[in-house]
Image (cartoon, rainbow, N blue to C red; front, side):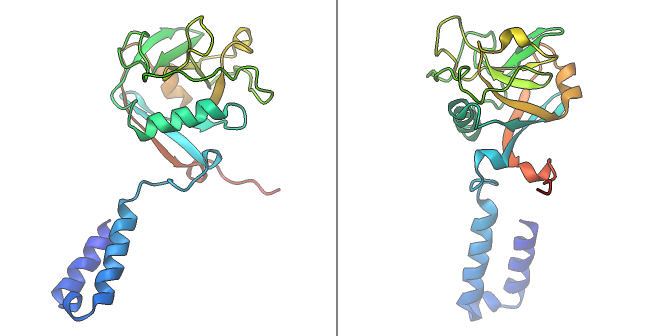
Length: 199
């Protein structure tokens, strides 16, 4: 954006904007391009969720092959800025930390529920850093709330939908307490955080 403003200033100072409509068209294209949401053309596999909290930042890798419905729902809520300003309302040491409730007490959701996917053949086990959908005892009752495991939780496998994993900032997750705020969650290119490996 700074580059665009600089170009605009230079062209305007030399009256080039008025002499050549081509320059104006180019400038408008650059401006619009800079304003578009980053990563909008990336597939879920190519994106990560970057969570900013008052304890620091952590990064979630998404697993669309294991939970396509949950991943699509998570991305939808992020794009709606649903999570921005919500808190982590539950913490159980050596177990999980949980957030994503608009009521701040574990009773709320986005206004809809999604299907369970814990029987999906590509489901991942609950390991340290695993991100999964919280739900009530009722089937298909997940909405926006998610939890992150502090350590492996094999007893949860086959009962809750895992849809991601923390790949950076697990030390931040370890420090999260009840009431800590998710300032924002935004989607970014996975390539920024994970180096490609040669096949």
